[in-house]
Length: 186
Image 1 (spheres, rainbow, N blue to C red):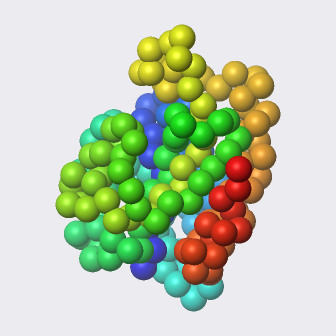
Image 2: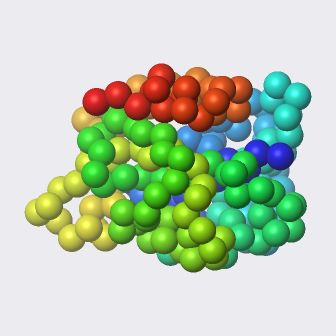
Image 3: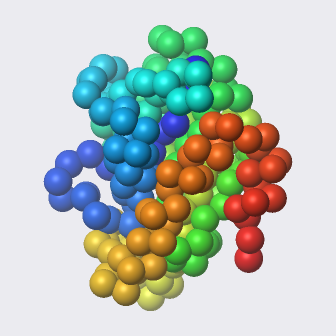
């Protein structure tokens, strides 16, 4: 089973914030793959289905970002999911708005959600899809990531949102090195 996790913060006040692009992508993929997010367990909203003969689980942790690892770890243990079968979708301050990168593993890069996931899984050897949100050095990082998309940013994100089904179906059907070669461009 493949576990695809979109990171974000629960609650209406965090909808359409930069930190919640992972939730946004999961919603798009849920619609595209016809996998409704209709279950709630262990502080996670999730859905399961099949794509290309493989069981898929989509998950939106319902604890705050810095506690995402508790939820991911619970699902990994309960459903006996191999760490190599996890893809975490998160925002990334170091990538420009509208850019994205697949990574096979790595450090948290200061992202509290990824840091907590690594802590609770006991490894950083899980795959990631990082979505660029840029960085406004004039604002406190917390205020920036919890800020709403500007109209200009929304237009730039639209291309990523439109590409989301291709990114995820490629993840589900292609070798990860091939995916990085296809999609990781400057």
